[in-house]
Image 1 (cartoon, rainbow over the protein chains, first blue to last red):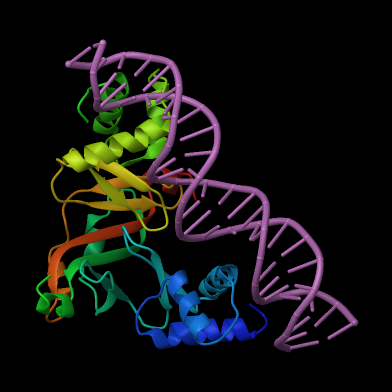
Image 2: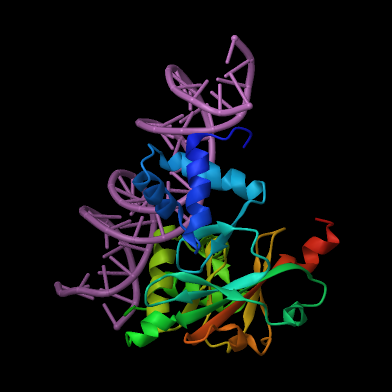
Length: 126
Length: 126
DNA sequence: GTCGTTGCAAAGCGTTTGCAGCCTA
DNA sequence: TAGGCTGCAAACGCTTTGCAACGAC
């Protein structure tokens, strides 16, 4: 990730402006819509490089694709809507998760995922 | 899942006796060690069928393969070891997760995943 | 004996990699 | 101009599927 190419700048712009975690396919589609020639391999290399640099972070939702979001958002978790398959950020964190860790194990991180229906899908009666 | 074949019985026995969620590769390896000829396709077809029947449940760990465990275990969560890539059960649940749910959203379930090193890998100094 | 199940191999599908040419610094 | 980056296509790993033979009932 030494040179700032047209493709890489576009990928960063797309992720920055998305407002929600994006999959590689979504990144590619949005970048192409913005008018740049782009291969899927470039997207994979970019998210890998940007992840290694700490610029973005992977969000892996069980049963769905991996998405990517900017990593400057502080500690938070995600809500996965089964109605529209979108992922939303949730502020904050329920406290004492580390109490679950078995004796002798070393906890390094944790993930909390809540699934259900988002406000929009609740209104639509799904 | 109408007939109880030698292979299917062995797969159920292996999952029942494992004490932790198993991947298809682990199920195949354990079944073969138990002395049965077995193909990976049979394992996939068995876990799919047993899942549809409600006998087992899929455990999807971010960044790793899907594992399978018996579904009669009650509410619990999982620990993912980055040293040996195995998954362990953790008893109980940190209570107040629902407080994270955004206003207007409907929570239907939640998942808590802790990652780090298991006791064995801590001892090995990974 | 019937027909659901198995095992092999091929096909899918998302992700990664080799390589020649391109383009940023 | 050097060498990191791109795009294509092939390789890869996990999962699914087609099909002929097998075996539970």
